[in-house]
Image 1 (cartoon, rainbow, N blue to C red):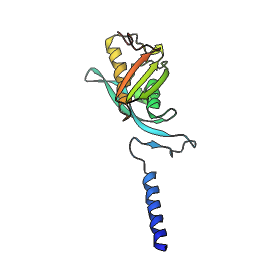
Image 2 (image 1 turned 30 degrees about the vertical axis):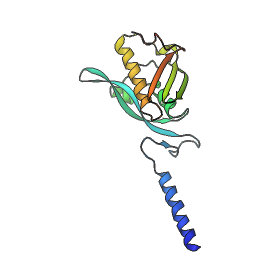
Image 3 (image 1 turned 60 degrees about the horizontal axis):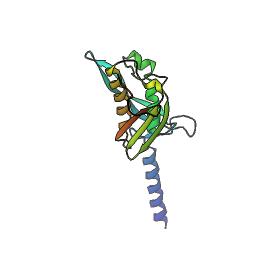
Image 4 (image 1 turned 90 degrees about the horizontal axis):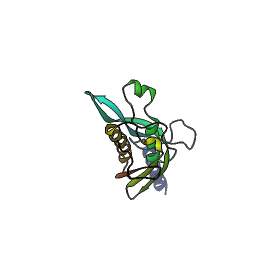
Amino acid sequence: MKKLIILLSLLVGAMLLTGCMEQPGEIDDENGEEEGEQTANVDLYFMEVVDGTEQTVPIQREIDLDNGQEESALKALIQGPTDEEQDEGYSSAIDQATQVLSFEIEEGVATVDFSSELEPAGGSAMVMSIQEQINNTLTQFESIDEVVIMVEGQSEDILQP
């Protein structure tokens, strides 16, 4: 009986230790935040000029998980690069006034309805940058294979140069 108790204690201890170790990209709820808050490390895709060409590049950032990992990452993307990231040359094609009106994931497809601020004032390069930033940020998650972008409930004739 004593051996069984010792064995169970060791097993429970091992499980607790394994559960306390943070893995990359996993949720971390023990970062000194208020109880109940959770954070995760995710890639947010911003624009950077590389060899004279603007490209979409990932920047890893720790974000608060207010609305689930996927939607929280999208909202962090909309907020744009931090001052420090801007100083390093990163920018965003997405207007920071843009709002997420609805966000749904069903069978691997994320359908996101944005406010009209998502519509760019620029040309086709700006449209492609917006689409790449959103698609790349969301498809990093295993739950999302495809992204449908809507503006004010419309999915056709949006994000046109």
